[in-house]
Amino acid sequence: MSKKLVRVFRKFTMVAFAFVLVCSTVSPAFVQAAAKAPSLNATKKTIVVGKSFNFNVNNKIKGA
Image 1 (cartoon, one colour):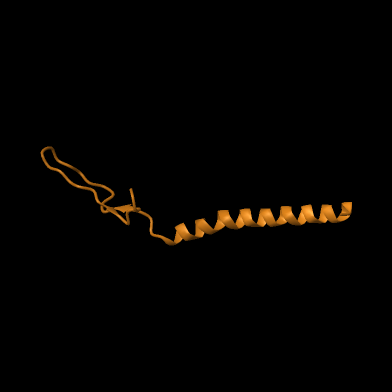
Image 2 (image 1 turned 135 degrees about the vertical axis):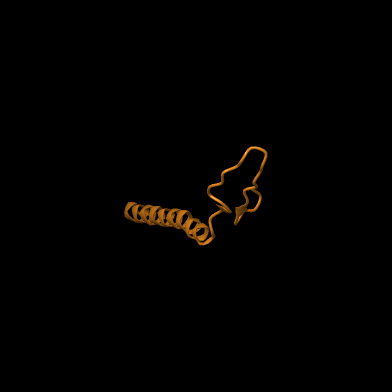
């Protein structure tokens, strides 16, 4: 192969790898953003001595 053809092939390969890298990092971000974030059923709670309260997490992540 000629040197010019080798340079063109290398540039094309680098651009293709960069494109794949950008696509693979951006796509999962959009998928996770669509899911609802976990939240607590209450953000503040005053607990008196002798009493208790259970905080529940809404929209739990599987395996958490």
